[in-house]
Image: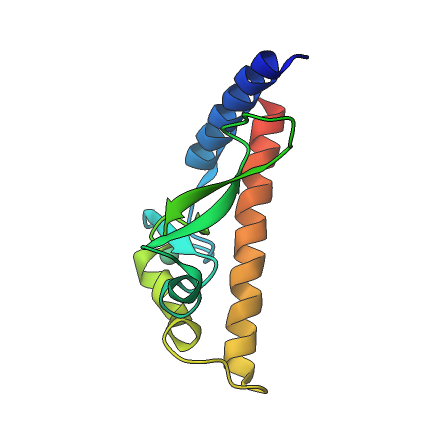
Amino acid sequence: MNLSERAKFQKFLHKKIKQSFIRTKHCFILGCNNRTIKSHSLSRARVLERISKNGEVMYMSTENLDSKDSFNLFPTGKAKATTFPGFCDEHDKIFEPIDAHPYEVGNLLQEFLFAMRAVAREYTVRKAMQDSLEE
Ligand SMILES: [Zn+2]
């Protein structure tokens, strides 16, 4: 597969995966049917702000291949970076203890919330990937 064909395939695959995220998105909290928002897997205020430059962070993209590398880094806004459709607005607020406060070693609530957010993100991604592969 030459680079042009590979780039077309990557764009096609990226579009299909994006559609799967749209089809499968829902709040991670059982029984909640509220519309999801773009939840951050990393705290926007505490983490992304620190590593951003001019309001942007770099991310790996499979969408725009212009070399033989598997992944290229592209700039994206802090508001979009590390987001996933895993929580509604109401339930995304439960992460306030880790989004608005520094981590305290041994704080079990914060440690639980970090773990829960990671599980929710992985669950959301895997569900969308399964949907994409089944299609
Ligand atoms: Zn919810």
